[in-house]
Length: 310
Image (cartoon, rainbow, N blue to C red; front, side, top):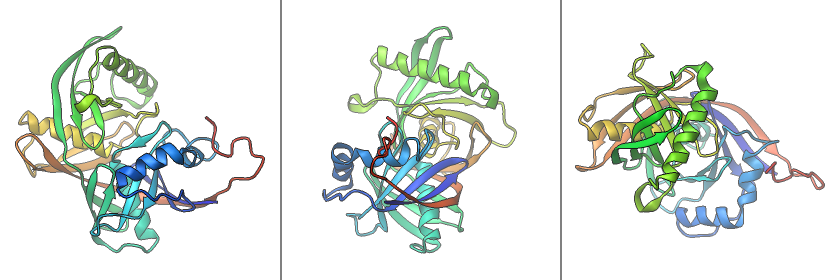
């Protein structure tokens, strides 16, 4: 039996595993991620894949932190695999831990495989996260994306790797989600065929499209296609971090200046940054999350989908 608490952050679900998870014994969080991936991946499959999960859901396995400042370690994953960081997920974890009585309002630290994240629980549902160091890696990358022609974007790190297109050739409207998903997959294929990667050859596994003219309540609306093929219902915390890094790199947003990022379904994150060095920033993302359910996930002998539908 795996015990979970589900929440959503601006519509994007997070499933926190707090009991019944795998016995991870590796030293660092990065090593624990590799152990989970190589030895216990069936736990990810059982909790995230159908029939117990769904394609948009992100899992968060609570782990023993190695950094003594941290109240928990957390490993994020989705229907495809594992994530370095997850902004909406970190917000969901904070609200969930408060719901469980494990943390009070105030400042806390979470340890992730890509670094320590500072989390401030402002209310029972509003959270501010100070994300990992973020930066623009490649600027004005041109791709040939038939039938859309040449598409220009930036490659940036915000805890995951993103290709960001400032002006989407498809309007960012809810009824266009299937077309936006198709366009994003074409862009991802073009990145692979043209050999464009993140630092050290890492895969660019998130595609982020923007429309700066469609919302009167935000600076920009975005559409984010996640690695497993689902679109992000939230404005995407790591994607917003990557966006801030690009804006800072181009001198279009100053330290401490706020940026309101709207998702394809109308949710909002409020974001700003501080300068880490000449090439990178530390973003702060503020959003709301709500606990929606508590459950025991059962694995019954004889169930053909005991570890999820592959």
